[in-house]
Amino acid sequence: MPAAPTLRVLVIINPVAGHTDAGKILETLKATLTAAAIDFTSVETRGAGDALEWAKSASGFDRVLVAGGDGTVMEALSGMIRNPEPVPVGILPQGTANLLCRSLAIPIDFKSALALALSDGVVTAIDLGYLPEHDRYFAIVAGSGWDAQLIEKASREMKDKLGFFAYVVTGIKSLFSLNSSNVSAIIDGKSYRFRAHTLMILNVGGIHGTPLAIGENVSPHDGALDLLVASNSSLWGVVKLVLRVLTKHFQGGSELLYFKASQFQLSATPPLKLEIDGECIGETPFSVEVVPSAIRLIVPREYAKAKSLHYEELTHP
Image (cartoon, rainbow, N blue to C red; front, side):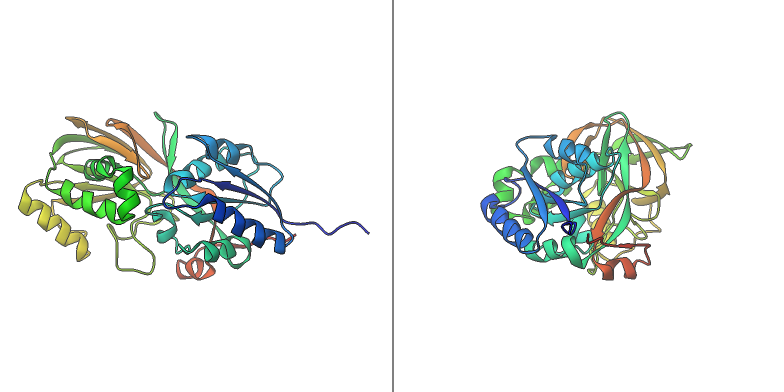
């Protein structure tokens, strides 16, 4: 009799993400996948673009698992969107922030995330943002101003010592050195002008299951993106802005504005630095467009149900 078909899995590992012990990860993966009789191939990233190329060329696999931080995950998702045979992607968080996992309720614990990606989760679609001039995608945010400043100042040494709190420390410091620019924006074809120190185009706006959020009704499942415009760089203005975010008073003030749309063109004088998903890539001007339902991700069933999302069961050959 012919042998029963087995699940074929590609595992992409960033061996230097966060506090990753690549050897221990591989040991856990091999033990788990071998015990489940899963046919798997594992590859380690050696430089920028590796995860993108492996995901882009992955064929014949039933699933792609990515062990790394937000940058590695986004590389893999950028490759998968270019793959003519897209397959579900499971994330095994190993980075400093792991913001995408936290926003989608994917467990931060490695073994729990692995169980979710192999059997416990469901498959649902998420939107991505795309920057045509850079030919780059993002899953979380494309930001200019405060967030790009804090990412630039959070050194590798600080992230190794403090983990996620490295961003908190540099973020607080950056709040008191903000400089505003004259901003021109075209949002779904309509022109606007602002005086602002921060522009953030959001695909996700909060951490699922927690009160942490930087916007309301910001969702990676709604086929749109949300622009946050933060102005008033004085000390009192910054304090008011922080208080508004902490108390979730997102609407009703001139120092914090939101726009939901599918296309944005932004420029600033003087220019503002630009980051996407934790990587500084240049400065303004830039344009962004949404790619609805771009990627199929494995998420907890409870998350999909709580968000009333369409989802598929994982296949088990």
